[in-house]
Amino acid sequence: MSAARARARRYGLRVVFADLGDWAACELLAEYDARNREIRVNRRVAGSLRGTELRRFVDLAVAHELYHHREAIGEVRRLEKRSEREAAADAFALTVVALQ
Image 1 (cartoon, rainbow, N blue to C red):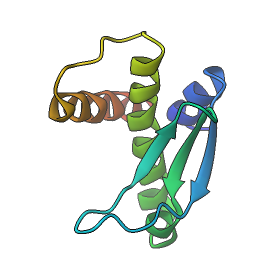
Image 2: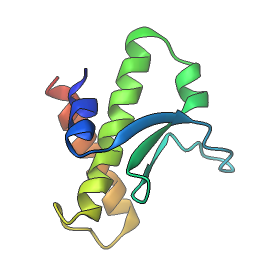
Image 3: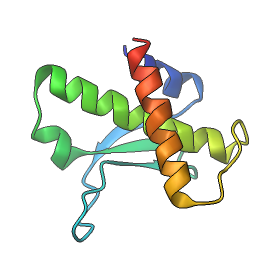
């Protein structure tokens, strides 16, 4: 099991694959659902990938959403601007995946 998915499990979060719908010009890769305690990875994107590329995508998506979970539970400070939060989540994801 990857480090990202192991962390999600330790936080009590499920990782599921789901069709996340259409989001105009951009494609939603994953989302964090605090109410259902799960991270949903876009099945359409995952379905277009194979092997190492698929594993890396899933690990980065899960780690990115883990950052948002950590914001939600107060483990990390929630930054004011959405762009800053997304950049911080991306940086966290890269760090988690690099440690694998």
